[in-house]
Amino acid sequence: MPVGEFEAFESTESAMDQVNKALKDERINIIGVYGMGGVGKTTLVEHIEKQAKSSETLYDKVVKVTMSQNQDLKRIQGELAEKLGIPLAEENVEVRASWLLDRLKQEKILLILDYLWDRLDLALTGIPCGGDVKTGELQSLAREVAQECKDLPLALITVARAHMFGKMHC
Image (cartoon, rainbow, N blue to C red; front, top):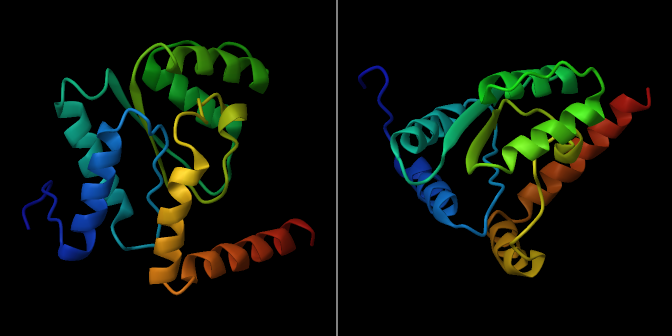
């Protein structure tokens, strides 16, 4: 495969279609791409980023922030502000979040958070969240996915949370 090109295998083609469809849906403002390490999530989002940047109609701006296992809110806010071209001289995390929130609401911005290892408090970071899709609309889809995977996602989340909880209280 030539360098820089994305080859969608049958296993990733469906995910790619779902993400592209969600990106075009005005009601959806958060999309999660998750899975085991090494399955191509970063490659997939890099392709999505490239497509979104080449499209003049989908987004005013595309911003990608690479996360780390240590979620340093100031670092995340600083990188996000830098990529948006706004200065963040303030040291207070809440004030910085407010400035970022105001800025992110001004334009239609695709924000890609790559290598997200743990839950991230979007509001505290300054990333708009919540909104247009009602939980009921997604519940039936979530049940279908869980049933298809024999409840594996629920089991993985439960085990992961228990593991994280154990680490935090050692």
